[in-house]
Amino acid sequence: MKKVVTIESFLHFVEVIKNISYAEKATLLYRGQPNIEYELLPSIARLNEENKKTLLEYEHKLVSKAIGKNPNLFSEDNHAINLLVKLQHFGIPTRLLDVTYNPFVALFFSCLSNATDDGEIIVFKTKYEVDDREEKIDETIHFFNNRYVNIIASTYKIDGEYPKNIEFLLDNIGYYYKGFNVKGKGIYFSTNIEEVVNHIKKPLFVSPIELTERQKRQQGAFILFPNKIDEDEGRYCYINQIDSISKDDDRVLELLKIPKDLKKEMIKGISKFGVTEEFLFPDSMEVICKTIKNGIFD
Image 1 (cartoon, rainbow, N blue to C red):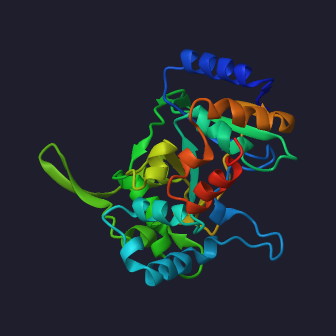
Image 2: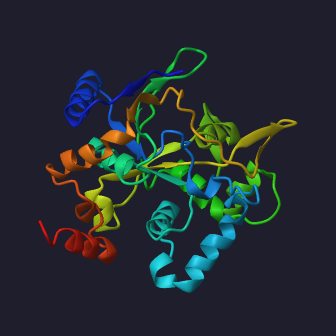
């Protein structure tokens, strides 16, 4: 189990973040959660306690209905990830989990609600060692036009019964995974399914196009979660399941506990740096009006 650092004050938080940032050369990403018990799991994969189901099996229907209701807003461009980002912005459950480049923004979200629960900030690093052969794997932050980002984000296009083989997924989203390779003077035909699977079997850090002012101010990025992939008699199949990221995962650098009794102090502390609800949600008239009402006697 990773050691959890308990934050003692706002100044202690600043000191902890400073020490982490100075010690690490890799780019860091942060996620703030208002309850330390929450899993690292996107909304579409969270279990409904009443019917013991997730919305993952209805992903195709959710996206199709959203596009049908407002095709101008939810039209897909050349990059499926941009559609998912728009859906997430308007409250449709997706396979995306929000993270940020700004630790103060993560702190805000860890304190925004659930005053009766301890909050948490998960610090992710972008480089780690995981391979059995002790090879270094560079876990970069991928851009919106990355081919593997597009494969995972396009999974919503597939409807019907699970499991499905990977070739079915790739063929139906229009990903051409076969090709001719030149070796010496000969030309031979090859498939690279193993290579594709290796890249889409784990969640990816994604930096999408900044589509909204909210996204810019929150300095947002995402973790894009794929369906779980199983191997069955030499064939790769994806199933109707998304696994959470363990908080003991190699990509998790630090776990910071925000005690519930400190949440108000933390909100006041970051507000002095301009990180407020009104700043982070500039397109929400509800938030703007609430700020006006609450500040009338200030």
